[in-house]
Length: 233
Image 1 (tube, one colour):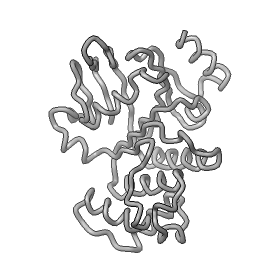
Image 2 (cartoon, helix red, strand yellow; image 1 turned 45 degrees about the vertical axis):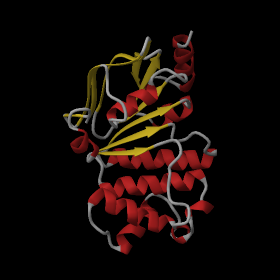
Image 3 (tube, one colour; image 1 turned 180 degrees about the horizontal axis):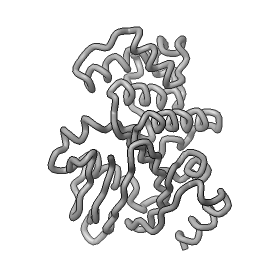
């Protein structure tokens, strides 16, 4: 569902991405680890057509994200580190607006409420202004928007950064629910515990290169930490 083939991106003399090839299948959570500047966000940005690759391809369901951006984006949902919503509108009103933009139709109120509850947002909170929400609540609205769009692939950039442990655990469960529905999930993170607990596979990036890949179930948290630190030397 998500694939890169020899993907490189140069900013002058800086190689933000250097020949990255990876594949994320439907029903899989791929957690991408790496230090700041490793190229994780640049990789996400190529899928979103926010930046064009220097060489190589990023494919969404077989569609080139650079040459067929609109068709590719119809299959994608994106949740950044800070979900931007209209603060003076309620969670329900934000979902109604963004779902209409994504689908081209007005969803019934009962359906919108169902989506928010499915995303673990309390029904009472759905009617409150978003400027009263915590970061975790905003993330849940973002997940509800993705579900309304029926996205085949979900891109997330540091989604658990700044969340308390309870909110992070709830968010991880939402990702597992999306996985169980056949969605391909690609998420960047600095959180090794989150990657181990949530991911199906884990990739490690360093200086624009994908230097290692492994199945999350094949190693302990201690093993993952040791391996990550070894690659960061």
